[in-house]
Length: 290
Length: 234
Ligand SMILES: Nc1ncnc2c1ncn2[C@@H]1O[C@H](COP(=O)(O)OP(=O)(O)OP(=O)(O)O)[C@@H](O)[C@H]1O
Ligand SMILES: [Mg+2]
Image 1 (cartoon, protein in one colour):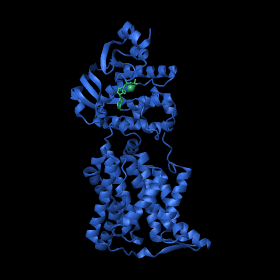
Image 2 (cartoon, helix red, strand yellow):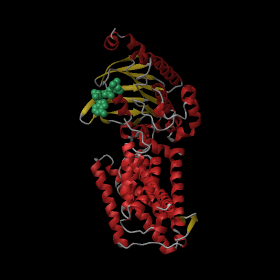
Image 3 (cartoon, protein in one colour):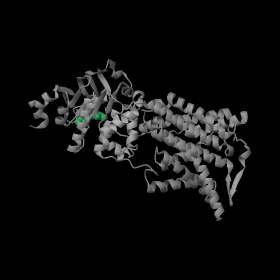
Image 4 (cartoon, chains in turn blue, yellow):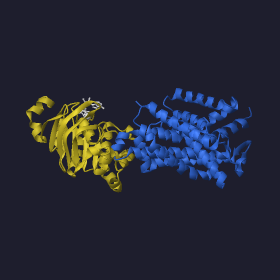
């Protein structure tokens, strides 16, 4: 195989992986803080994509700029969802929580189907096919921008979690909820914010991929599957682990497609997950909890 | 300042506290002593709203704490250093301390409180960038107390601060508590280390299977033959 083909697959993988990282950070944050598995996470992305699509159709707003709209909108939606539904099942058995988020996922998918039909839709930006060439390797401009925004947002999330009072409170609730309550932290407020932030990050991921990705009602499913692999690989609730895991999965998928073809992507992804877990059973970065 | 009346509390169907009444006055250090399973932790946890109160009341400066969401207590000036320290293990010493000053009033004085805590426990200053989970047992206990102090509490409740510490460290911790008490913070101290606790305390309550069986001044109880026989084996 030509080295340039391998290099190209690597570049494509890393660029896509950045978006997986972003979406996965949202998912792992919600899990780590709220202790709930959000099966509707892919639908946050899907909603972000549709919103980006319609903003483009109606106002020609650039999809990447649309993230400035989709993030607060989906963040607000996430908060509402927590207040009205998710917050009510926190003390309930795991199964009830799973049913709830799966149900939310199905409702949102079907709502999208009803409103927007099953058609594949896309936007056409000027830079859709533009690419920078370095040697024989092409860097798609749209993918570069998506990657750049995803990395910046992931980094900012890290800064938020480590450098702000609210971010520290979020980590505190994740590490020991009861101790946090004794310090005066209202866990429900923190949970709501974690869901909002997670939803906003997924929505941003949806916006930045619109220049090169179709949107359809079930588009979230493939992303959420990837995000679950990433979250497990990175260590449940571990944000840095999710970031690394996203990049690894992007590359794994890219090589899967190169070597196995079309559906090889997720397959190779699972293979990599199994390998990682064989070496580090608690994920890339999570310390084993005694 | 804190007044508990006829408190009954427990876990699920199991009642652990059977009508406890006690009081902590402004500036006082009150010890709560008793054997394993007597209900000391449960009592503190009931005050903090961490276990369900089945009957009775808990008043703090005219407010009924049993009708309040638990996270509200810190803003009233009540700090609870729980059993087992309960630090945030994957955060640094300083981050743990900063979180102690989460409520608005404490946050405004955060930098000053931090210096005060570091002055009280210089070890913590040396270790400020270290993860709390990697501290030694004694350092962890100091951090737990320091985190409680960051609130600038009016009432500090401590659950077995000497647990698992070497005799020397126990001395250190108790001399720290002595200083805190002198500064005017009211203390409610649950301890199995009876001699140390009673020596520090103005008053004390002895708990047995969820009931107060003796109360008096620290020195009185230390000299009581009944207590010495039951708990000190002499
Ligand atoms: N989470 C719980 N669920 C059920 N029962 C509990 C729980 N925690 C404590 N208990 C029971 O409540 C009783 C009082 O326990 P508590 O922890 O208050 O005692 P303690 O005086 O603090 O003891 P120690 O000195 O060992 O800390 C014990 O019989 C204990 O078994
Ligand atoms: Mg106890």
